[in-house]
Amino acid sequence: MRKHLSLIVVAIAMAASLGLSALALLGGSAGALVVDANEHDFGTVKPGELSHTFRLTNRTRHSIEFRGIVKSCGCTEASLPARPLGPSESTAVRCVVDARGRRGKFVSFLRIMYREVGGQDGEQQAVMCILRAKVDAVVSIEPPDVEFTLGRSETKRFQVTSSEPGVKAKAVRCDHAALEAQLGGDGLSFEIAFDASRWKDNEGTVSVDVETSWEPEKVIRVPARIVRQHDE
Image 1: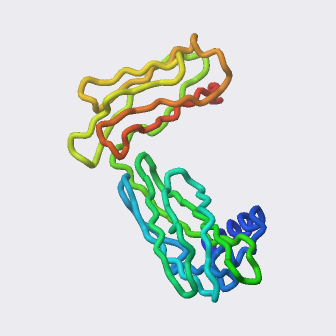
Image 2 (image 1 turned 90 degrees about the horizontal axis):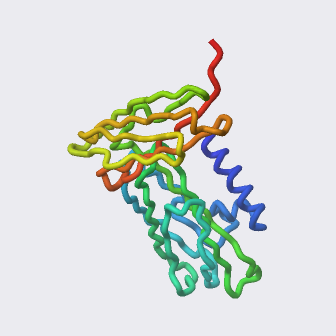
Image 3 (image 1 turned 60 degrees about the vertical axis):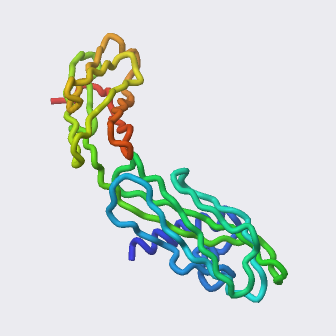
């Protein structure tokens, strides 16, 4: 129930920005273009490329002209047929999601823009398709993030593990002069040293990028937070 309410809220917000009815955006009866199923859940997957095909049907007596796709995520690719879709005709839209480097749950929204040609209402409409997945990481960094304390220089150690054999860290890069990374010789551990004298800011977060030999998770980002000393 909560999931469907969230979807309706998203639809209303998108519809308002486009001047459309929420029912048309969700592919309901008010829309001329109907999707076989607006939402697809890939379930739990490993990082990599995912694909799904939505089937669209023209339920009107007029042709439908496709105007384009608006995507919520650059990780998703999809293309529409160049020719208009005739009355009662159907077409397939294949979507490819690049889930490499992703972790945990994610959602990708696609708004398929179209207009009815020759009907009473030739205004632009949209139907929304949704792709969901939960990505289980193959490569893990422990701990997954780190905190350093302002004014205190220290070094912290990390372990690299993988459910795939032979996967190792190849390099570790920090984006701030106050942090220096040292990769272990086996590629299964590394250290990050924080030099407090080179940190001139207040609290903040910087990124540590770990390059691995596993192509679908080529770079794993470890957040390094610089914080004030916690009260005892």
